[in-house]
Length: 80
Image 1: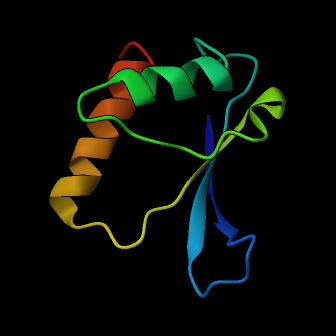
Image 2 (image 1 turned 45 degrees about the vertical axis):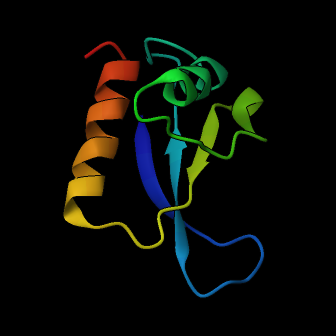
């Protein structure tokens, strides 16, 4: 998985986080989005380009504990 900053598609003054899942990923982008939504706490992602292996996260603003929670949710959803 590659994680990069992406400009806000609506022109707002903050970036989004783009998750680009490669062929080596343990599951596809759509399945990852579904697992994240079904988790506790649920994590909602922008999945309109999931067919290309891409998910966007809107992370404005997150505090350190929230970032830790998000990281744990991603690890759990990816089976790690």
